[in-house]
Length: 411
Image (tube, rainbow, N blue to C red; front, side, top):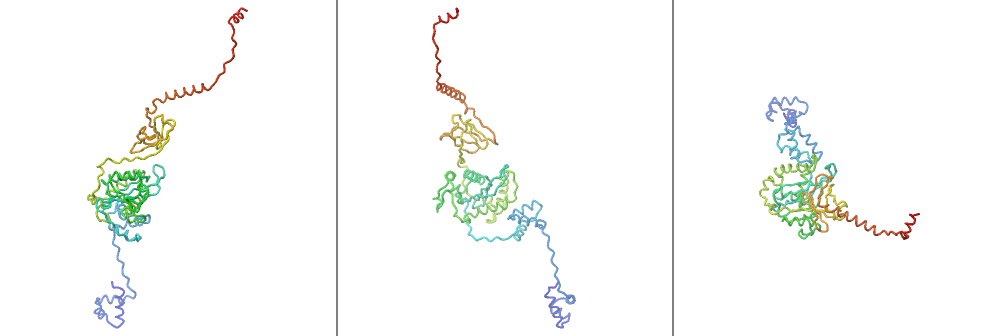
């Protein structure tokens, strides 16, 4: 079909007096074509080319809807529509998402690459309030990424205290098979109490300092208000939100973390956008410090409780017995693993295994041995004290000879 300008040219030449044969010779168009377009009185409309069917056609509306709900990644959307039957390539999905998603301009930064085994990055992120075991609680996510291989580890928690932070580190080290020479942190209070200009001069949280010295890694602090200093972990947090957490269903914290481990298996086995390599393959080149060279660091959390008059302390909805001589005293609970120690006056007095559930009682008979005898002694002593405090006056009785009574008897 001729274009509009070609049709106009034919009509213009004809208006100049040229014959169909002459126009054909001048333009190169067949005489039948020239005659045909001279007979057309309106501008010829070009036929739109039929759109070629794409394997993505039936999923485009779903993708658009999801992108309106939130900033899902192309890889996440590709996985979802694959579960719905899509058998096309990821590049089709990526190109479509790029075309319809708004572009966000970000300032350019110089990427800092680390050598194998040198550095990893850690941060917390908040994931709002969720319902766990029938209660609404704040949800947090611990994130660690190895700088060289880009291997990720995440763990969801309900607390961000230093004890939880240390436990998450231990779980991450087990997942990676070791730890890097240094770990980069934001200026979180669980790590640093006072930040100095140079990281080594900072005042560290005492429990965290004990932990990192035991494990043998060096903590580093990123520059305040410079998020690009820890860009790898910042990118990981955003990726977790979009590619894993957005729209996820879970029925418990354990269920959520189990799903997170399955997600980690997938992303750590996929090509990374920055390195264009698979993290789990690059991980083989990481020279991590082995974690089994020393015994596992023992995490101890301390809480204060008052021993009740009936010789029990309460912890997490359950009761645990304590030697009866300590009733009414203040005790420190040193909690670790699945047990805790009871310390009174700086001395350990007993130890208990943590009970599952609530409204249960852990009773050690030895804690009450001798209690009954002591109670009886105390009661007897109390009675004697009461009796001694009471003064009775003896009645005045007249003393008579027995002969008087005999005389009365004889009448």
